[in-house]
Length: 122
Image (cartoon, rainbow, N blue to C red):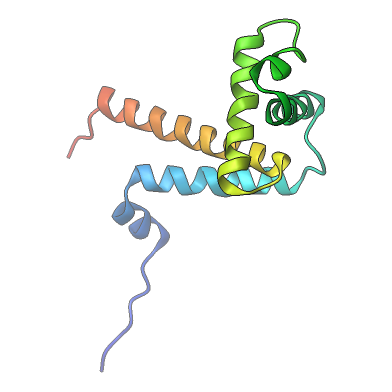
């Protein structure tokens, strides 16, 4: 008689590796956080408005919305606009997708750096 063994969660996570586990977990947790919000906060709406201005009038139009640190803020707004253009999503959804990608990238980068700094023994 053959027995079916069901893999444990820890054995599955070990098999797929820590980087993939962190990336998938980050996306999952971001989706949970987004599902709890109705709309972006005021700062997020400013970036979405700047992305809309960028689509209509270019970089100068987007930068005109911000009176300080316009390069960084305009960069994020342009990235949102490009994400919307590439994916065909609305600006708000493109902003969420960009944030998910950036957070996922940071999590994976931190894990990769920590693996380099602290080698696994055994």
